[in-house]
Amino acid sequence: MQVLGIESSCDETGVALVETQGNGLPRLRAHALHSQIAMHQAYGGVVPELASRDHIRRVLPLAEEVFARAGATAADVDVVAFTRGPGLAGALLVGAGVACALAMALDRPVLGVHHLEGHLLSPFLSADAPEFPFVALLVSGGHTQLMRVDGVGAYALLGETIDDAAGEAFDKSAKLLGLPYPGGPWLAKLAEGGNAEAFKLPRPLLHSGNLDFSFAGLKTAVLTQAKKLGGDLEARKADLAASTQAAIVEVLVKKSLAALDATGLHRIVVAGGVGANRLLRAQLDAACARRGVRVHYPKLHLCTDNGAMIAMAAAMRLQAGPQQAVRDYGFGVLPRWPLDATDGAALQA
Ligand code: KG4
Ligand code: ZN
Image 1 (cartoon, rainbow, N blue to C red):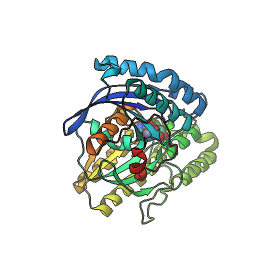
Image 2 (cartoon, helix red, strand yellow):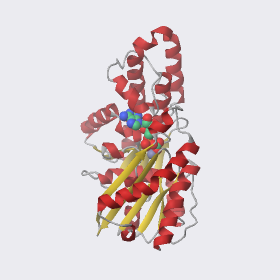
Image 3 (cartoon, rainbow, N blue to C red):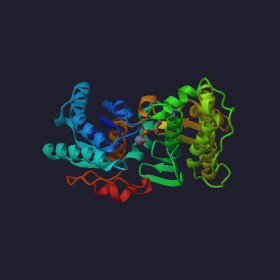
Image 4 (cartoon, rainbow, N blue to C red):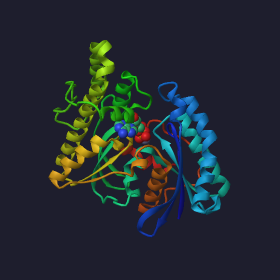
């Protein structure tokens, strides 16, 4: 079975073709991606209306690119999957509209996929695929969650951020340091030349006794430090970046270890854009190696949003359960959609 996946929830348009293989893991045949980052950079953040319009321009040419790379045609597609939510409503509607129109024209069923389920299952696209059950640390621009994952569709929320997401903490701190959008990778780069112990920044909720996160206070602390430094900020920027990154990473690592303790599991999957962060990878790898815990990451270029993870999640869902794809082209989207509520909603894609 060939599954076409379309991602358009935020500022990346992604399309991919995945093929199921008996009971084995689905195989990625081809994927193509267009990032709108350069377009939004002038505004310091994503402009939703511009995002939607750009998705419209990109999605069909990207689909053609995917078919060309895979040596396939639209007629080979058995199911069309799309990101149903969460995300920007207008941006989601573009992917949903195109997916449903294509499926209707081809007389094929559609399947709406949860964006975070895509991130969560993206490590299955790497050579070192995980096995169920595992703990998942989902760290993106919009979400920070720890989940217990027992199988496809079996997700239990263990803890999440009560305010800003980890990616948001990176992005907002980076903005305060005058770095371009999205600031995460820029801040990480700047931090390489800095001293992580130069500034004492808060580790919010580190000892809260639960698995929730809070990052809003960190951004305020960075702002306070930046103001205090005044004219010296430029010279101390790398130190402040390194201290900020260290604070975010320490909280993510310690809470992940606490989630492993709480569940008794020995496997963790890291997914979402912040999963590309090198310090996070190094510290989590080291801590988990000491405890005999296996850590799985998506391929680096599949950490941030892409179509491959959406096609993969759809293919894994279709393999795991009864037919969930339907010939219903009413393309509803769910801009707000909790991941542990995917079951009922996915049935009415
Ligand atoms: O998963 P993603 O592409 O989009 C969402 O679904 O939100 O994540 C984007 C986020 C941004 O906040 C970006 O700054 C962050 O991931 N990010 C990073 C790195 N690469 C991307 N944060 C820290 N270090 C990185 N290397
Ligand atoms: Zn994402």
